[in-house]
Length: 196
Image (cartoon, rainbow, N blue to C red; front, side, top):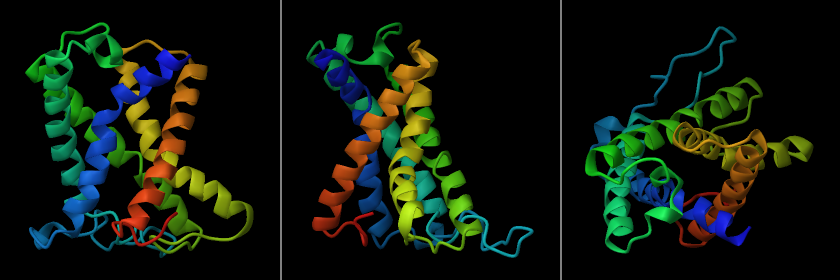
């Protein structure tokens, strides 16, 4: 069991680090023109914003670029220290530069695109971007906020490593709990406005 958990973490080092770096990237005062909302301020048929102002093209492109860079760098480290057997991406495939670029792009897409349905749902329920609600909905959205991108990243892993539904859900749960802990740390480091 401990080996499985270790492999889960080793496999998702790329989006973990890319997610942290992307928060820094989005706060940097460069390429301001990319800080355009992905929905371009458009409203859905209910008159509410589609995703809101927090989902920007700068963040989306940051996820793609940073996941790709991290995937290549971690691929080199895994090769250098002979750790390929601890990464689900390398169990059935060779650890090569172009394979890692491919994995990085897919992880970037999985991470960022799987955040969008959550934002869409929150706008329908009149929850402001970056805010939360009360009661049971608060607990549900705290979990969903941490798990949405993990669903996408674990789905990418499942394309390259055969896993059961139970394994997939366990992977998402571990990823969501890790995301909660990281968000708490990032909040205390003042890289996040809200803890949850």
